[in-house]
Every structure is written in C-alpha cells, then in structure tokens.
Length: 152
Image 1 (cartoon, helix red, strand yellow):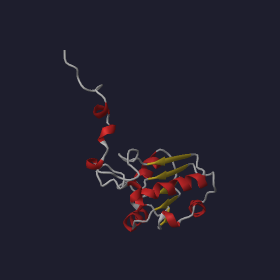
Image 2 (cartoon, one colour):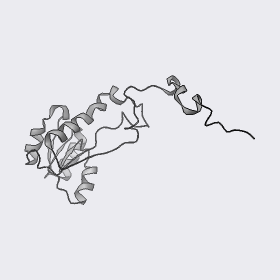
Image 3 (spheres, one colour):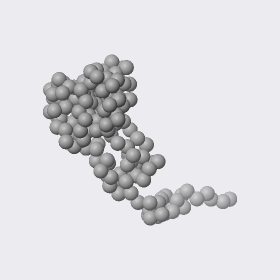
Image 4 (cartoon, one colour):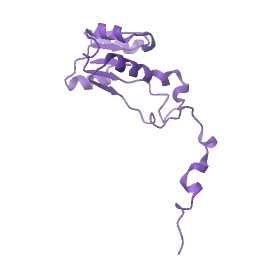
C-alpha cells in the first residue's frame, strides 16, 4: 500500500488492520512526518509536497513497479471543501490536491484506491457563491406552485 497526504497514518492504520502492508507515504507536514518516523520507522516517508514528487519515485521507494501496488490511499486536505469552512473549493491551492491523487493512481495503476471523503466535497462549487448572492429562482418552490399546499 502507498499513502498520499498520510497525516499521522490514521486512514492507513485502518487499512493495515484489514491486512494491507504500508510501504511508502507522502506527507509534507513536519509534525506528521515526525510522528510517522517515531512510530513507524519501517515506513519510507517522502517529506515533500506531492506536486514535487513523481509517481516513479513513490513506487521506487515502496519497492514496487507500476501495476504492483494493491492500494493507493489518500486523505487530501479537506478544509477547502468542508461545509464547516469557507468552501473555497478549487479557488484554494489545497483544492487541487486531489488531481495529484488521480495522477498517482493513473500512473501507478494500483488494483484499488481509496480517497477519504469529506462532507461537502461533492457539492462544492468550482467558485463559491454566498447564499445571499445565489439565484434562488432555480429552487422548485420559487418557480412552481407544486410545493405549495392547496386549501380545500
């Protein structure tokens, strides 16, 4: 298994408990890297931004070739999509990190891939528009009477 945006390996520990062997991780946060190195010295950590890491380097560090990885797992930064935040989506640099996950999956050709979900990732707009600026006329109860209760 290869882990991208590994954090402190939370997602990966779950996959390991299901029988997968973590070979390499990509993580840029220095605190997370130190945590991995302290708790899992057997895991090869690439501590650079995913944008600067080629897929062939990840595979080499994992001791694998394209098509040999069983799983590529990822927990890309979710703050930009979360319904609890500003929802800047791809207007935030972190909003494009999922493309690097797709790049590694496409080039590495694992049998399976897992990407951590965050509430709001599927509903986030390409460009956020505050509700006050939204076109509310597209809502069904604003355009038809079908949602209005009829009397008598």
